[in-house]
Structure formats: C-alpha cells, structure tokens
Length: 275
Image (tube, rainbow, N blue to C red):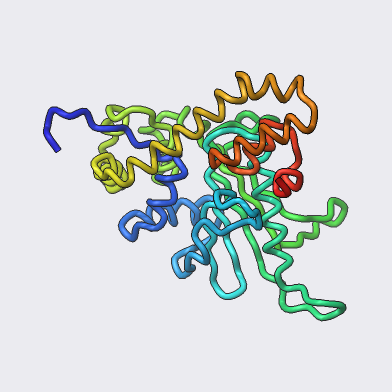
C-alpha cells in the first residue's frame, strides 16, 4: 500500500471485527482475558462450538456471534453495536433454547447444559446509566438461593470509554479501546498490552477481503437506520398488515435479518419466518 494512502479506520465494536479477533490465534487471548476478568469464565480450553451458530431461523443471516463449548458448558458471546429492543430478546431466546438441549421425551432427560451469555453492548443500560457490567442469575429473593444453569453478563462499553485511560487497570483499558472512533485516537494508545490489537486493526485496514465484509456490515446498518426513519417506516405506520408483509419481503430480499425486519415492520419473528 502506498504511504500516502489514507488508512481506513476499523472499529473494534463491529461484528465483523469482533468475530475476526476472537478467531485469530494472535488476538484471541486478549479477548479471553477480558471475559475471565469481568465474568470469571476462562475460555482457554473451550472450542468454538459453531461460529455464527444459527438460532433456528430459516434466514441465513439470523445468527449469533460466537458460541464456545467445553464438555457440557456453553458460552455465547454477542456483540451489539446498535441499540435494538430485539438484540437482547434474540440473545436470550437462544440462551434458553441452548439450556433446554438436555431434555428428551416424557420423563427422560440428559444432564442439562450450563449456558452463559455475554453481551458486549455499545450503549448504556436504559435503567442504570452508569452501569459498567450487570450479572443476572435465577435466584430466590427470600432465601437468596441461586440456580446457576444459566447466567447472563451485560458489559456496557461506552461507560468504560468515558473514563480516563491512564488511570484504568489493564482490562478496563482494553474495554476503553472499544470506544475509539478514529485512527489517531487508536494510535495515541502506546501501552504494550494493547499494541497487538492496534497493529491488527492496521493490518485489517489493508486487507481487501476483510474491508469488503466490514463495509457491507456498515452499509446494511446505515440502510437499516435510513429505512426506519424514511419511507419504510411511514409505510409501517400507515399500512395494513398485508402492506407490512410486502415491506418485510422486500427487506428479506435485501438480506436484512429477521429481528431487523421485525424492528422496522412491527411484525413478529414467527410471522416473518412464514413469508
């Protein structure tokens, strides 16, 4: 690449980037250490069970990000770049489905799996604005008894980026990096611990195949926001159910995910799957 060509900025919070870094042996440990520190889960000996594991939808693009497996334990990791009421619903539905895999017919059942969901959210919690991380389990309020077959962790990245970088601990500095928005801001980070990520982002900026996938994701998200604001949303507000179904079909042909289409049309996921 010529030295005078402007380097493209690659965001850490992009689905495309996030999945790549987790699959890359050189950067995987950097992310594994974040999960261990914040969630107490060591993914070192886990295998990626089925990258982009399908949630059950008939539409190819309706997928989770990463699913890790060790014996009967599963860890689902989701990267949510844009706030959507369906993001958490989709992730939890898959969590519950995964947790029920041990059941058979009648009274027969296998040893139920332990399933944990970790969400890296690029927005604040709508009820607790200053929350950095929330941890949910099933428990009894009276006796404080906990069922730990399923567990949810929600990491709210913008709150880490609000902090002063120089005053943060190692892992919090890594989470701070998810909020960088320019190349210059990325290059201002000189810590040895984070240089592996900065250099990888620079290499990705010169990888044409990766850039194509990265740009496609961004174009789809921008188009989605535009459709929600402009004509499609007007059609939804004023149209009949049949008109909403026609809009949904057009969005399916453009490879939008089911939850995105549901968000725009206000049709249920099951209704869209039958189209």
